[in-house]
Amino acid sequence: MLNDLPYLSAGEGPPLVVLLYTPQAANPKGPARWSTMRLVRPFTKHFTVYVVNRPPGLPPVTMMTDLAAVYARAIATTFEGPVHVLAISTGGSIALQLAADHPDLVDRLVLAGTACTLGPAGKRAQRAYIERARHGKRPSAALAEIVTESTIGRVLLKGLLWLSDGGHEDYTDAVTVLNAEDGFDLRGRLHDIKAATLLIHGGKDLVYPLDLARQTVEGVPDARLVVYPGRSHNGTFTDKRFAPDALAFLTDS
Image 1: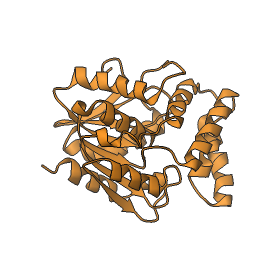
Image 2: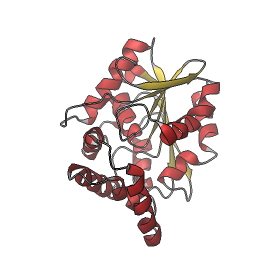
Image 3: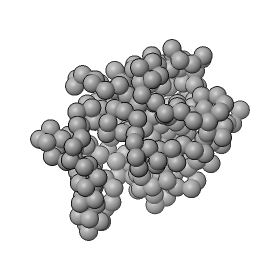
Image 4: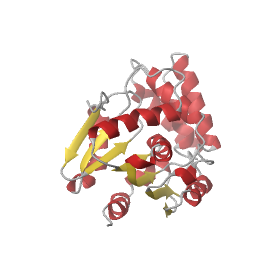
């Protein structure tokens, strides 16, 4: 545990804190763990990577500022000085809040597939996820809308996502985090972020539309945007350019 937070670590070198979204407030297991470590493996050649998760059992009224404070305490008590942060999707929302509220803790920030607030489709899908979870239904099928624009693709994906939930998971912690992101809007606070920032974004991201990514970069004093045309939300992080682009920024002295 990293200041009571579950985490995975690998690699050698200065710390790189990675923030991702996971349905459970625990280290990923099985295929999810494999895909997580595959994502961060290129970074382990330059950094000691810490994939840090939230603690279980957060109060249902938790806001994004509360989540950022949880990670801020872990960073402040574990590392000497500010750290580099790599954050994806909902993890990026948390990282933006962290960098705005605790600018002394983040010295370089790479974001992917995220923005200063959710787009309309992202909000709609996440609210549907929350409602399904609250009614005891497998919730992930609600996310098909933000994965593809294809009608046939959504029908097929809903079935696959429904199966992926397994039927025995507790999604209470996931609902808490998604509720926090539902109320997240940092457009009035972006100027408080002092870290050098890179946002890598897909041109066809349905969760956080490209115009919101542009607003985010325009609001952060030292930020730039890299767009992968034609890439979806998930396609951004799996693109072969992602790790090299992020590493070039993180290791640029």
